[in-house]
Image (cartoon, rainbow, N blue to C red; front, side, top):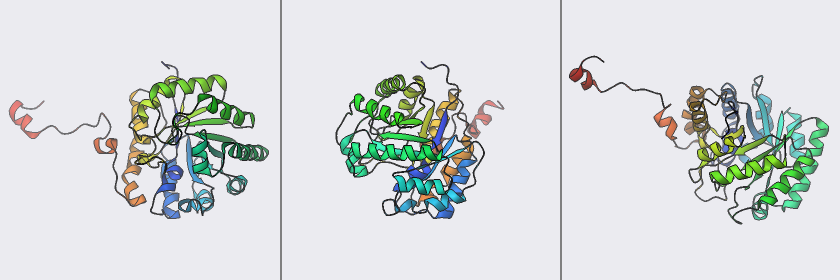
Length: 316
């Protein structure tokens, strides 16, 4: 068991991964206010938006304006998803701190999600990595479906290792292992994290977990026990994958923070400030939802005892 990692880093992906699939368009002013509120919570990173074509993701058509207008807090890294060279150019124009590139580790999901073969995506990402290096901006690469594909089933570990190694050779500063449709289980997570860490010594690994089948927190513990200290999460569990019918979203940031803080693992995130943001999410995205932690509160939140106790037993 990992006993040395007393601090982890959380990358809040709600503004990008969360809002991109919401049916109601969130106005630019509200997106900016959302990111600014998150900035005050103490995150290591916030994924603000995606520089994908507005036609492909109309929910984030205002990407450049949002990135320009947010109030950047010292110590917070502001990232964005970049799908191609044009997206890279748009991201650089507004001073994005770090770029997140994405491809799938399974062939069918990559074709369905990105309209390209894996080899085509790999070539595109290598071009972006080279251009980003020339511009002096670091890139992280998120490998989707590493723990399972909704079309192909289990993905061979060798495929994941091959893609991750090629991307690091091309200049990726970090690799995110994504449980895109919530198919992962703890021993699988631990095993893959260990194998990738051995193959890519010194390369930071991030775990991107979904709670589709209720195992996100257990999977987070499994990753942490192998030495992973970076985690993607979304406030309120926003997000999800269109190729996972009935899927819930990303692991809830507030639940991840609560769990690790209970274990004396420092996250840097102010849980009470985050819960205040989560309470406002139904209004932001124009739909009702709730989370268990929001309903129950912190495990040490106490309540007034029944009045009849004092009448029967006297003052405590």
